[in-house]
Length: 517
Image 1 (spheres, helix red, strand yellow):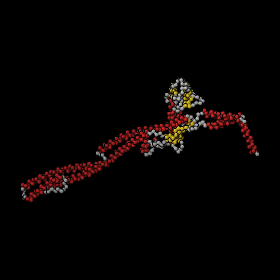
Image 2 (cartoon, rainbow, N blue to C red):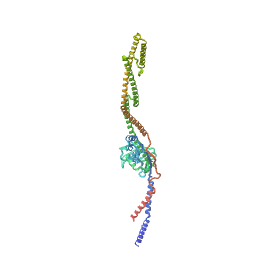
Image 3 (cartoon, rainbow, N blue to C red):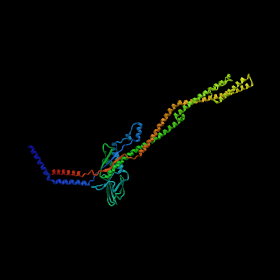
Image 4 (cartoon, rainbow, N blue to C red):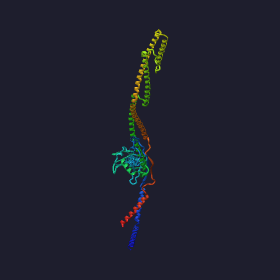
């Protein structure tokens, strides 16, 4: 019973509330009309903001000449220092870096903002301002405040008010163009190709330092991976002026590529200096080693050690054979001499088949033996001493003496030849014994020469590769999508704004009714 009473009481109270608000529907309607009207006015007044997007593919870095040299010398790659695989996270941080945005600001002059001088419906300019304020000195590098200029007037005369914050610091009226001299430097006020002499000028200009403008731009641009599985970097920003947003993202990509090229050129320039210095040193050392090789060959009478050794061995064998032949002939001649010197062999035939090779001696001995045979024939036909036998004996004795003189002369020649051959044989044997030491010493010098030659060729090759890398103009970031804008603005969203306005209107009206009644 009590539960039914409670439910009926709740229904009765709800009816009372509904009746209460229905009687005051005009308040809700007025509140709704006002809020929706304000929302619609905001939609018409507020300029749409678009989302600008760009995508790039970051290419893998090629191994640098320096890392190749270090890899060859140390046996492992130092690509993390000067080359190697690209880290997508590192590249994103490079794009997000303050210096990159500062570069974009400076290239596009984003530290200078132009707009119409209207305080209610001010319209920003981007590269289409009718006038420009150009600092004659680049003060934006060190400027740590915001300088504001208000330019108003006609084609004949304009008034320029310069302020710092809310404080006016300079004012000047003149005809365009003219130089505005201030405590912050001189500024040239001039017209552009968008200037229309038929219209009055009403422009506001704001000039800040590059650092502040880069800081503000850094907050507007979002840099992230397009997907986790691809090396594609996505860049986004929200901007009222589509052209300005596209220029900013495209310039950011260009600055990134330019910065990478500059880093590569700096590295390549350092490498070129290093290679030139090393090539100069190695070339000098190579010339010294080549001179050392030349001097060693001259000192040791070498051309090609292997060929030289073969020649020496062949000559040594030949000298041994000739020495044996000379010693044999010397011994045979000495035997003949001894035979002729013995008194009992005065009229004995000299043996000819004992190995004599000298034709003169052989012919002489043959004639000597023929004379001895004639004497024997004569002795068989005569008895005792006869004048003919005496004459023949004298002839034989003369021939005997001549043969001894010839044999002694030949013996002396063979003796000299034997000594000469022995000396040459000893020389070649000494050369053969010294060959291992010479070969070891020469191989050591030659090894140093080969090392220097290989290093010299390697450095020349790396110099060419470094020159090619400096000549390569392929950008690091491959543009997948140039900066583009979505077809629909991201703000204001009319439906969301109207729904929000309706909610505010209902809440506001309800609060008013509760307070009033």
